[in-house]
Structure formats: structure tokens, C-alpha cells
Image (tube, rainbow, N blue to C red; front, side, top):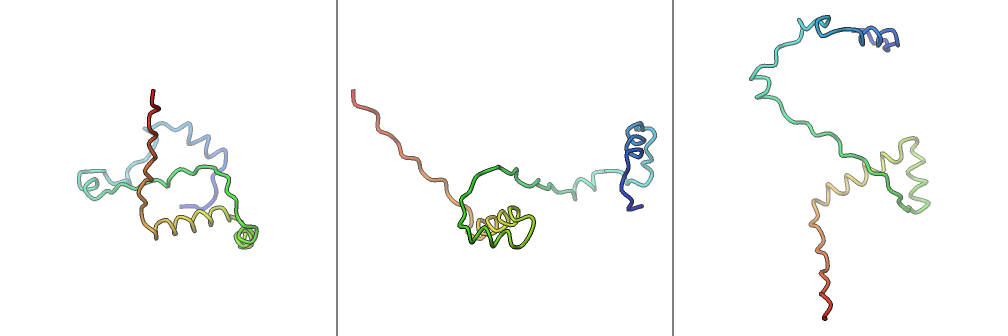
Length: 100
């Protein structure tokens, strides 16, 4: 298979194709044996945008290793989280009802 990037004309041609135009001859059938061996793959957790205050030297250290420092920070935090293990949720304080 060619490693050339797709160009707009290729995408337009593919978009015009119908299911009948697609050659499925080299694709094995998805039978019961396939699904017995299949396993579920979890997608990466959704990212959430947050504001975090970091010490200036820590931020310089992260940025010094180049582009992608936020991804590296996430990786470092995930490794620490997985090393530490699951945490139990904190118990919330119950407020006493006001005396009438």
C-alpha cells in the first residue's frame, strides 16, 4: 500500500463510492470465532481543561524538554496515580438540621 498522503481528489472519489463499489474480497468474514477472541479496548479518558498553579521552576523544567509539556505532565500525574492506587471517596460532612 502506498504511503502517499491522500489528496482532495482521492477523498472526493471515495466519497462518491457506494458500498457495491468497495472490494471486500481480501477481508476475512467476522464469524463467531472472531468475536470469541475479540476484546474490548477502552478509549482514553476524556481530557478536562483546568487551571493549575505550578512552581516556576517546575514549569521551566517541563517546558525545557520541548513541545508537549502538558501531555508529559498528564503522563507524570497518571503514573503517580496508578502507583498510589485507587482512592476512596472522601466522606462528606453532614450538616445538622437547624433546631426550630
